[in-house]
Image (cartoon, rainbow, N blue to C red; front, side, top):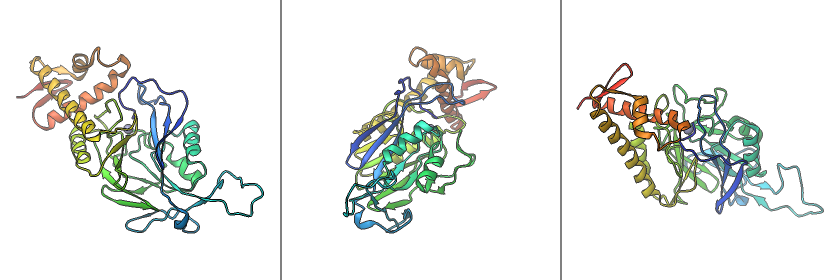
Amino acid sequence: MPPASDKQPQPVPAIEALAPGLEAVVLPSERSPWLSAEGMPVRAYVIECGPAAEQAAGPGAGAGRGAGAGACPAAAAGAGAGTRPAGGQQRPPARPAVVLIDSGYATRLSVEAISSAIAGRPLAAILLTHRHPDHGGGARALAARHGSPVYAAPAAPPPLGADPELRFRPLAGGERLVFGGLELVSVPSPGHAPDHLAYHVPARGWLFTGDAVLGEGTVVVGPPDGSLADYLDTIERLAALEPVSAIFGGHGPPVTAPRARLEAIRRHRLMRLEQIRRALAAAPEGLSAAELVQRLYAGEVPAHLLALAQVSVLGSLRYLQERGEVSAEGERYRLER
Ligand SMILES: [Zn+2]
Protein backbone atom coordinates (compact mmCIF):
# COMPACT_ATOMS: atom_id res chain seq x y z
CA MET A 1 0.00 0.00 0.00
CA PRO A 2 1.60 3.28 -0.98
CA PRO A 3 2.07 5.81 1.77
CA ALA A 4 0.22 9.08 2.00
CA SER A 5 2.02 11.70 -0.01
CA ASP A 6 1.28 13.90 -2.95
CA LYS A 7 4.73 13.56 -4.54
CA GLN A 8 4.46 13.24 -8.27
CA PRO A 9 5.66 9.85 -9.52
CA GLN A 10 8.78 9.74 -11.61
CA PRO A 11 8.00 9.01 -15.23
CA VAL A 12 10.63 6.26 -15.70
CA PRO A 13 12.54 3.91 -13.42
CA ALA A 14 15.98 5.07 -12.33
CA ILE A 15 18.96 3.35 -10.70
CA GLU A 16 20.73 5.32 -7.97
CA ALA A 17 24.16 4.37 -6.63
CA LEU A 18 23.96 5.02 -2.88
CA ALA A 19 27.20 3.52 -1.55
CA PRO A 20 29.79 1.03 -2.76
CA GLY A 21 27.84 -2.18 -3.36
CA LEU A 22 24.43 -0.59 -2.83
CA GLU A 23 21.99 0.66 -5.45
CA ALA A 24 18.36 1.72 -5.31
CA VAL A 25 15.96 1.03 -8.15
CA VAL A 26 13.43 3.86 -8.09
CA LEU A 27 10.16 2.80 -9.68
CA PRO A 28 7.33 5.13 -10.68
CA SER A 29 4.26 4.78 -8.50
CA GLU A 30 1.40 2.92 -10.11
CA ARG A 31 -2.29 3.19 -9.41
CA SER A 32 -3.70 0.30 -7.46
CA PRO A 33 -7.31 -0.77 -7.90
CA TRP A 34 -7.92 -1.02 -4.13
CA LEU A 35 -6.52 2.41 -3.49
CA SER A 36 -7.79 5.63 -4.98
CA ALA A 37 -4.63 7.60 -4.33
CA GLU A 38 -1.19 7.85 -5.84
CA GLY A 39 1.81 7.08 -3.73
CA MET A 40 5.45 8.03 -3.92
CA PRO A 41 7.94 6.22 -6.18
CA VAL A 42 8.84 2.81 -4.78
CA ARG A 43 12.41 1.78 -3.98
CA ALA A 44 13.93 -1.68 -4.27
CA TYR A 45 17.56 -2.17 -3.22
CA VAL A 46 20.33 -4.22 -4.81
CA ILE A 47 23.17 -5.10 -2.42
CA GLU A 48 26.38 -6.84 -3.48
CA CYS A 49 27.38 -9.75 -1.29
CA GLY A 50 30.97 -9.81 -2.52
CA PRO A 51 33.83 -9.98 -2.69
CA ALA A 52 32.75 -13.21 -4.24
CA ALA A 53 35.64 -14.53 -6.29
CA GLU A 54 36.94 -16.73 -3.47
CA GLN A 55 33.48 -17.53 -2.30
CA ALA A 56 32.19 -19.13 -5.44
CA ALA A 57 30.49 -22.27 -4.26
CA GLY A 58 29.80 -24.16 -7.42
CA PRO A 59 26.44 -24.46 -9.07
CA GLY A 60 23.26 -23.35 -7.41
CA ALA A 61 22.31 -20.19 -5.65
CA GLY A 62 24.08 -21.24 -2.48
CA ALA A 63 22.13 -18.83 -0.30
CA GLY A 64 21.89 -19.97 3.24
CA ARG A 65 20.76 -19.04 6.70
CA GLY A 66 22.60 -19.00 9.95
CA ALA A 67 26.25 -18.73 10.83
CA GLY A 68 28.50 -19.62 7.96
CA ALA A 69 25.71 -21.26 6.02
CA GLY A 70 25.66 -18.93 3.08
CA ALA A 71 27.61 -18.61 -0.07
CA CYS A 72 27.47 -15.92 -2.63
CA PRO A 73 28.38 -17.39 -5.98
CA ALA A 74 30.43 -15.40 -8.40
CA ALA A 75 29.44 -14.97 -12.00
CA ALA A 76 31.61 -14.49 -15.02
CA ALA A 77 31.30 -11.02 -16.44
CA GLY A 78 28.55 -11.00 -18.99
CA ALA A 79 26.93 -14.19 -17.74
CA GLY A 80 23.21 -13.93 -17.97
CA ALA A 81 23.48 -11.43 -20.76
CA GLY A 82 24.57 -14.12 -23.18
CA THR A 83 27.82 -12.38 -24.08
CA ARG A 84 31.53 -13.20 -23.72
CA PRO A 85 34.50 -10.89 -24.10
CA ALA A 86 35.82 -11.19 -27.63
CA GLY A 87 39.03 -13.03 -28.46
CA GLY A 88 40.08 -13.89 -24.96
CA GLN A 89 41.54 -17.07 -23.57
CA GLN A 90 41.53 -15.23 -20.28
CA ARG A 91 38.92 -15.98 -17.72
CA PRO A 92 36.80 -12.86 -17.26
CA PRO A 93 36.83 -11.32 -13.80
CA ALA A 94 34.28 -12.69 -11.39
CA ARG A 95 31.36 -10.48 -10.50
CA PRO A 96 29.84 -10.62 -7.06
CA ALA A 97 26.32 -11.84 -6.55
CA VAL A 98 23.63 -9.59 -5.19
CA VAL A 99 20.69 -9.68 -2.80
CA LEU A 100 17.49 -7.80 -3.58
CA ILE A 101 15.44 -6.09 -0.90
CA ASP A 102 11.86 -5.76 -2.14
CA SER A 103 10.77 -6.54 -5.65
CA GLY A 104 8.66 -3.65 -6.92
CA TYR A 105 5.43 -4.17 -8.80
CA ALA A 106 4.40 -7.19 -10.85
CA THR A 107 4.39 -5.06 -14.00
CA ARG A 108 6.79 -5.62 -16.87
CA LEU A 109 8.23 -2.12 -16.47
CA SER A 110 9.07 -2.76 -12.85
CA VAL A 111 10.45 -6.29 -13.34
CA GLU A 112 12.63 -5.18 -16.28
CA ALA A 113 13.98 -2.20 -14.35
CA ILE A 114 15.02 -4.37 -11.41
CA SER A 115 16.53 -6.99 -13.72
CA SER A 116 18.57 -4.31 -15.45
CA ALA A 117 19.92 -3.20 -12.07
CA ILE A 118 20.84 -6.81 -11.25
CA ALA A 119 22.73 -6.66 -14.54
CA GLY A 120 23.38 -10.36 -15.03
CA ARG A 121 24.82 -10.93 -11.58
CA PRO A 122 23.59 -13.99 -9.68
CA LEU A 123 20.66 -13.08 -7.45
CA ALA A 124 21.29 -14.92 -4.17
CA ALA A 125 17.96 -13.99 -2.59
CA ILE A 126 14.93 -11.73 -2.71
CA LEU A 127 14.08 -10.42 0.77
CA LEU A 128 10.67 -8.81 1.16
CA THR A 129 9.89 -6.19 3.79
CA HIS A 130 6.20 -7.01 3.28
CA ARG A 131 3.90 -8.28 0.58
CA HIS A 132 1.94 -5.19 -0.42
CA PRO A 133 1.99 -5.22 -4.23
CA ASP A 134 4.42 -2.31 -4.59
CA HIS A 135 7.03 -4.25 -2.57
CA GLY A 136 6.30 -7.94 -3.20
CA GLY A 137 4.46 -7.75 -6.51
CA GLY A 138 7.50 -8.48 -8.69
CA ALA A 139 8.88 -11.28 -6.49
CA ARG A 140 7.38 -14.23 -8.37
CA ALA A 141 8.58 -13.05 -11.79
CA LEU A 142 12.04 -12.07 -10.56
CA ALA A 143 12.47 -15.34 -8.62
CA ALA A 144 11.58 -17.33 -11.73
CA ARG A 145 13.82 -15.32 -14.00
CA HIS A 146 16.87 -15.32 -11.73
CA GLY A 147 16.35 -18.70 -10.04
CA SER A 148 16.34 -17.09 -6.60
CA PRO A 149 14.60 -17.93 -3.34
CA VAL A 150 12.18 -15.41 -1.86
CA TYR A 151 12.11 -14.75 1.88
CA ALA A 152 9.17 -13.09 3.63
CA ALA A 153 7.23 -13.26 6.87
CA PRO A 154 3.99 -15.23 6.86
CA ALA A 155 0.79 -13.55 8.09
CA ALA A 156 -2.79 -14.76 8.42
CA PRO A 157 -4.71 -13.27 6.79
CA PRO A 158 -2.12 -12.07 4.28
CA PRO A 159 -1.79 -8.32 3.70
CA LEU A 160 -3.96 -6.52 1.16
CA GLY A 161 -3.02 -7.25 -2.41
CA ALA A 162 -0.45 -9.96 -1.57
CA ASP A 163 0.30 -12.32 -4.47
CA PRO A 164 -1.53 -15.53 -3.51
CA GLU A 165 0.71 -17.61 -5.77
CA LEU A 166 4.02 -16.38 -4.39
CA ARG A 167 6.06 -19.18 -2.82
CA PHE A 168 8.47 -17.96 -0.17
CA ARG A 169 10.66 -19.23 2.63
CA PRO A 170 9.06 -18.10 5.87
CA LEU A 171 11.19 -15.72 7.86
CA ALA A 172 10.68 -14.58 11.45
CA GLY A 173 12.09 -11.55 13.20
CA GLY A 174 15.59 -11.86 14.61
CA GLU A 175 16.88 -14.32 12.01
CA ARG A 176 20.44 -13.98 10.80
CA LEU A 177 20.91 -14.35 7.05
CA VAL A 178 24.34 -14.74 5.50
CA PHE A 179 24.97 -14.46 1.78
CA GLY A 180 28.68 -14.60 1.04
CA GLY A 181 30.23 -11.63 2.78
CA LEU A 182 26.89 -10.02 3.57
CA GLU A 183 25.15 -10.55 6.88
CA LEU A 184 21.62 -9.30 7.44
CA VAL A 185 19.33 -9.63 10.43
CA SER A 186 15.55 -9.57 10.04
CA VAL A 187 13.81 -7.19 12.44
CA PRO A 188 10.10 -7.60 13.22
CA SER A 189 8.38 -4.35 12.31
CA PRO A 190 4.58 -4.75 12.13
CA GLY A 191 2.30 -1.73 12.24
CA HIS A 192 1.92 -0.73 8.60
CA ALA A 193 1.47 -4.37 7.56
CA PRO A 194 1.20 -7.54 9.66
CA ASP A 195 4.03 -9.32 7.84
CA HIS A 196 6.49 -6.43 7.96
CA LEU A 197 10.22 -7.05 8.45
CA ALA A 198 13.11 -4.61 8.35
CA TYR A 199 16.61 -5.79 7.44
CA HIS A 200 19.66 -4.65 9.36
CA VAL A 201 23.17 -4.89 7.91
CA PRO A 202 25.23 -4.38 11.08
CA ALA A 203 28.62 -4.33 9.35
CA ARG A 204 27.60 -1.33 7.25
CA GLY A 205 25.17 0.33 9.66
CA TRP A 206 22.40 0.04 7.09
CA LEU A 207 18.74 -0.47 7.95
CA PHE A 208 16.21 -1.27 5.22
CA THR A 209 12.80 -0.36 6.52
CA GLY A 210 10.27 -0.85 3.71
CA ASP A 211 7.12 1.03 4.71
CA ALA A 212 7.93 1.06 8.44
CA VAL A 213 10.08 4.16 7.98
CA LEU A 214 9.99 6.26 4.81
CA GLY A 215 12.63 8.68 3.64
CA GLU A 216 9.96 11.36 3.82
CA GLY A 217 6.23 11.61 4.32
CA THR A 218 3.92 9.58 6.51
CA VAL A 219 2.97 5.98 5.98
CA VAL A 220 -0.57 4.66 6.30
CA VAL A 221 -1.18 2.79 9.57
CA GLY A 222 -4.72 1.55 9.97
CA PRO A 223 -7.20 -1.22 9.28
CA PRO A 224 -7.26 -3.80 7.91
CA ASP A 225 -3.48 -4.31 7.69
CA GLY A 226 -2.21 -1.81 10.20
CA SER A 227 -2.02 -1.41 13.97
CA LEU A 228 -0.82 1.80 15.59
CA ALA A 229 0.10 -0.02 18.81
CA ASP A 230 2.34 -2.36 16.82
CA TYR A 231 3.70 0.56 14.84
CA LEU A 232 4.75 2.57 17.90
CA ASP A 233 6.46 -0.56 19.29
CA THR A 234 8.23 -0.98 15.95
CA ILE A 235 9.56 2.57 15.96
CA GLU A 236 10.99 1.98 19.45
CA ARG A 237 12.52 -1.34 18.39
CA LEU A 238 14.18 0.26 15.35
CA ALA A 239 15.47 3.16 17.45
CA ALA A 240 17.18 0.65 19.78
CA LEU A 241 19.11 -1.07 16.97
CA GLU A 242 22.88 -0.57 16.80
CA PRO A 243 24.70 0.40 14.72
CA VAL A 244 22.50 2.30 12.28
CA SER A 245 24.04 5.10 10.28
CA ALA A 246 21.53 5.19 7.42
CA ILE A 247 17.94 4.13 6.86
CA PHE A 248 16.79 3.10 3.41
CA GLY A 249 13.00 3.14 3.21
CA GLY A 250 10.62 1.68 0.67
CA HIS A 251 9.81 5.21 -0.52
CA GLY A 252 11.75 8.45 -0.32
CA PRO A 253 15.45 9.32 -0.10
CA PRO A 254 17.96 7.75 2.30
CA VAL A 255 17.77 8.94 5.89
CA THR A 256 21.18 9.98 7.20
CA ALA A 257 20.01 11.03 10.67
CA PRO A 258 18.15 7.87 11.69
CA ARG A 259 17.55 8.70 15.35
CA ALA A 260 16.12 12.12 14.59
CA ARG A 261 13.87 10.65 11.91
CA LEU A 262 12.55 7.90 14.20
CA GLU A 263 11.90 10.39 16.96
CA ALA A 264 10.08 12.69 14.53
CA ILE A 265 7.87 9.78 13.42
CA ARG A 266 7.05 8.86 17.02
CA ARG A 267 6.19 12.45 17.91
CA HIS A 268 4.07 12.90 14.79
CA ARG A 269 1.95 9.87 15.70
CA LEU A 270 1.53 11.04 19.30
CA MET A 271 0.61 14.52 18.03
CA ARG A 272 -2.12 13.04 15.81
CA LEU A 273 -3.49 11.07 18.79
CA GLU A 274 -3.58 14.24 20.85
CA GLN A 275 -5.37 16.11 18.04
CA ILE A 276 -8.02 13.38 17.95
CA ARG A 277 -8.48 13.50 21.74
CA ARG A 278 -8.95 17.28 21.56
CA ALA A 279 -11.37 17.17 18.64
CA LEU A 280 -13.46 14.55 20.43
CA ALA A 281 -13.33 16.49 23.70
CA ALA A 282 -14.82 19.46 21.85
CA ALA A 283 -17.64 17.35 20.39
CA PRO A 284 -19.61 15.66 23.20
CA GLU A 285 -22.08 14.32 20.62
CA GLY A 286 -19.21 12.41 19.03
CA LEU A 287 -17.61 12.52 15.60
CA SER A 288 -17.33 10.13 12.69
CA ALA A 289 -13.94 9.22 11.25
CA ALA A 290 -14.78 11.28 8.14
CA GLU A 291 -15.55 14.33 10.31
CA LEU A 292 -12.28 13.87 12.17
CA VAL A 293 -10.41 13.73 8.86
CA GLN A 294 -11.99 17.03 7.84
CA ARG A 295 -10.99 18.67 11.14
CA LEU A 296 -7.46 17.28 11.22
CA TYR A 297 -6.36 17.16 7.60
CA ALA A 298 -8.45 19.57 5.54
CA GLY A 299 -6.15 22.05 3.86
CA GLU A 300 -3.09 20.09 4.99
CA VAL A 301 -3.43 16.99 2.82
CA PRO A 302 -4.48 17.07 -0.87
CA ALA A 303 -8.10 16.03 -1.36
CA HIS A 304 -7.19 12.86 -3.26
CA LEU A 305 -5.23 11.60 -0.24
CA LEU A 306 -7.99 12.12 2.30
CA ALA A 307 -9.13 8.50 1.89
CA LEU A 308 -5.70 7.34 3.05
CA ALA A 309 -5.76 9.86 5.88
CA GLN A 310 -9.03 8.31 7.00
CA VAL A 311 -7.39 4.89 7.25
CA SER A 312 -4.79 6.36 9.59
CA VAL A 313 -7.49 8.15 11.62
CA LEU A 314 -9.29 4.81 11.98
CA GLY A 315 -5.98 3.31 13.12
CA SER A 316 -5.63 6.02 15.76
CA LEU A 317 -9.25 5.58 16.89
CA ARG A 318 -8.74 1.85 17.25
CA TYR A 319 -5.62 2.52 19.33
CA LEU A 320 -7.58 4.84 21.65
CA GLN A 321 -10.45 2.34 21.87
CA GLU A 322 -8.03 -0.42 22.86
CA ARG A 323 -6.92 1.80 25.73
CA GLY A 324 -10.46 2.63 26.85
CA GLU A 325 -10.04 6.32 25.97
CA VAL A 326 -12.62 6.31 23.22
CA SER A 327 -15.91 4.47 22.71
CA ALA A 328 -17.73 3.88 19.44
CA GLU A 329 -21.42 3.82 18.76
CA GLY A 330 -22.13 2.96 15.16
CA GLU A 331 -19.90 5.29 13.18
CA ARG A 332 -19.55 7.89 15.95
CA TYR A 333 -16.66 8.07 18.35
CA ARG A 334 -16.70 9.70 21.78
CA LEU A 335 -14.03 10.50 24.29
CA GLU A 336 -14.46 8.45 27.48
CA ARG A 337 -12.12 10.30 29.78
ZN1 LIG B 1 2.99 -1.13 2.14
